[in-house]
Length: 114
Length: 113
Image (tube, rainbow over all chains, first blue to last red):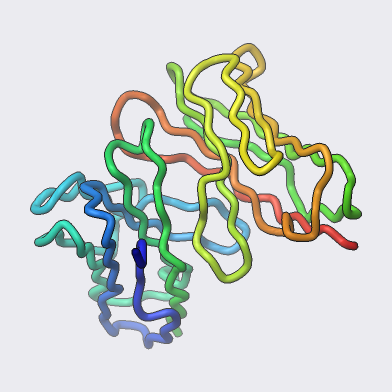
């Protein structure tokens, strides 16, 4: 079991460029999440999904898009990168609702937008 | 609105010292409470949780008790080790089903031999 994997580990983007952060889990979890972690701050929820074909906005969705075509994959798309999107991005998954189920996190992607 | 306030770091302790990291929350209803730990270069891992008032979560020698009257969930460990050096996050989720974990800003803990 690899758990939750994320690629790439690091990326530098220029303003206006686009990219996709990849997230894959092999635990057959229905729920998946994307968070961002800014320096000295807690994590903030960007988007989440409760199953293939279903996505919903979190606390800070502006500037991002997601899709969930399979149970395993939950990519995060940045269309027009801005310096405010410089952050560490974490993907997570859980068996069911986060109210009672543990979330398993990937190792993160450190993104810098210059 | 909903928020978590936890002890600001960094916190530096000697090995075998007693640890307390304070955490208080502001939430509606009866949230579930969590402590997550982030070791260097890794993602967050669930350390312990409590889902109702007076529950005590425990794991790896760490404990925290859900105190509804003081809206607190302080993390404690009787004797810390060098391997406990990490960043600790207090978090909660409302039981109204919106899937949004609210995190504190994290407390960096360093244990020196």
